[in-house]
Image 1 (spheres, rainbow, N blue to C red):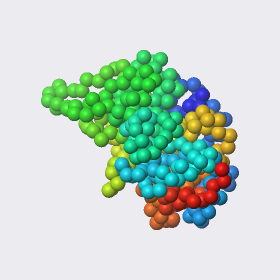
Image 2: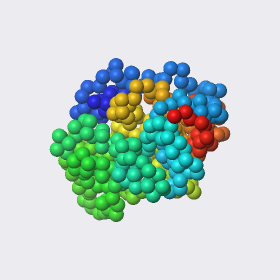
Image 3: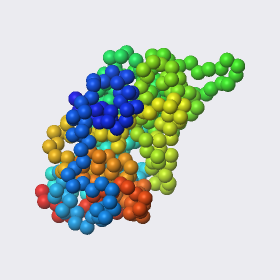
Image 4: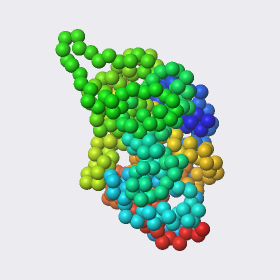
Length: 349
Ligand SMILES: [Mg+2]
């Protein structure tokens, strides 16, 4: 049910997305619920930088929050390096009775795969605490009852999307299997695509190539009603801790460019994942949820547009200069150098 509400929110965001959703056979959206889902928190700052304060009294924030939703890349880790002080903060929050979730736009791993990454970094988490955009894509397909269509998914992306589709029994092709696929441009040369592909899901794919783009283009342009789903639209991402790397916005942009279609977005800043969490865990007040992230245009926007408190951490892609610049129109409630600054806040259990 919650995904239906989220889909309604998507419909408000973009008529094109709504068209895509309806082609997929979802129930008609409820605009009343959508309005509730997207209502900003009372008193939440919108754009004015004067209301964006460096967090100096962590205890005050922590005492007023029951649920923390952490982005991962740039907040918990950078590449494969754990950000200093994170384990102690997570331990402190758990001991204080806070509920913790991890929401990531990275689709290269499934929830199971992310548990492995957390474990490798010495952090203990439950799969249910992790909301990756690979999971969001599968949950969306489940919500629109895609399996009943008898169609399959073409995946531009990595194993995370495939593992999540396997868990819901949706057949898929593409993905890593097409990593080395070639095209041949001779007379009469063509790529043969499967007419039974009913959706193309595009997630981050380090092995993207022209064959995959052509295959996705053929499915979307030539298969009637074929859906176009994007796990996220992130411009850059942290594949290593040394530099920023082109994100899934590049992969989605390639498919958009040759289809002139807008995708259904399931990752941040779409409301799908937060609606799912609020509904599944019966969280009564969004005002007592804090979204903590390093990216203004996904994490903070995601939190702000969904009525959550927001905290930006400068341990990822956003600098203090960028945050406080006149050009920035997205203000968090608070910002910190890293979430290590939550430690020692004297949270009352
Ligand atoms: Mg991040």
